[in-house]
Length: 455
Image 1 (cartoon, rainbow, N blue to C red):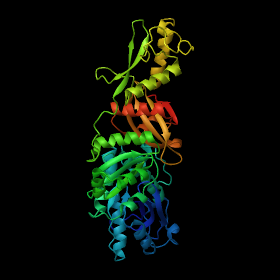
Image 2: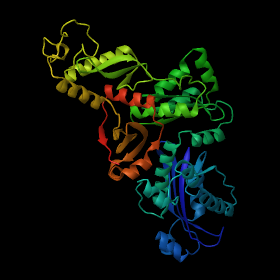
Image 3: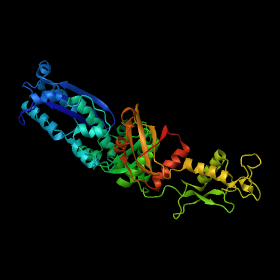
Image 4: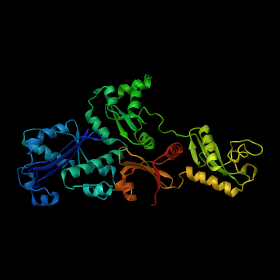
């Protein structure tokens, strides 16, 4: 559990500042579950430069509650949570000072989004909140007011959680929370999970990921891990102390995140994360009569396939599909051993390439159209699909035929600028497995939209 926090102060000498406004959003890693926003009477004058910066003046604060009147609410909303702030050292120091004046020792763990951004967004020109969020396309209103800055920090923190593929943030928080015993029962763990699409993580007592996976129903899948009776499942059940998750909004993003994070985290109970995900491919060649052929074959590392498949049957089924869609010939594509024309010539579904009646130019053009439609070779596109919440979209970037990463954005603010879009994308390694995941997914299922990108 996190609390995203921002404080405005009177300014003045170190450790003599007073709080003028505070905004706190209690965030469970996915949504805000509580919030507290209030002006605060600091019982001292505000420095003129602060009035100019924030717009908060002495008159506005005369009837505001004093700090001791809001202290209990602050303690309650931050209890059992990690304070997250932009320059957390400042906000945490101010809070501790105010509570010390009341004779109360206020202690919480903290995370600083400045430090996290330096690790996870190393190429940013500036790490000031205003410049950083603007560069990421995060909308900001009421800059230099507590709630405006807290909301901007919340959106930044969501982005940092997404970019943290090594899960260092979650692991460090879980490690500090776990005492070595299975405090919540497994039933309670499952109850807290959503019945939505995403990636789930099973953690041991040190916060390390021991198993991760993707599912279209996270709650149901984790419940299966906890109810399975195999020897491996029993070991997993014994070692699991916490379960965390990330909603992805759509299955393709979940598949790609699972693939990327298996390679980076190497969980002990995910044993096959290095294997190739496909066994067969479609290869193009030119037959003796000049016709462009597509044939299903086992993977040949010396040749580049047009598309990849989990089995020979899957590859041949796809050939039958594009035969119907583009009027291709089963004999040329190796699906028919007929001595004369193929079986679809008589019903006019084959135009006679099998008996050299169709010109090679027209037949080969349709074959190239099929390859163009179902291959991402050299294409630069953004695959857009459902996001994690209403008003959000997921973008999966492919540049020159290679998967580059994925991210989430609000259509109103970010899709119009390719540089902002690329800063939001979490970089992930593109390889033969990611190409297979994307192309095989698009062959079977629909996404919202595919946009061509011009760099």
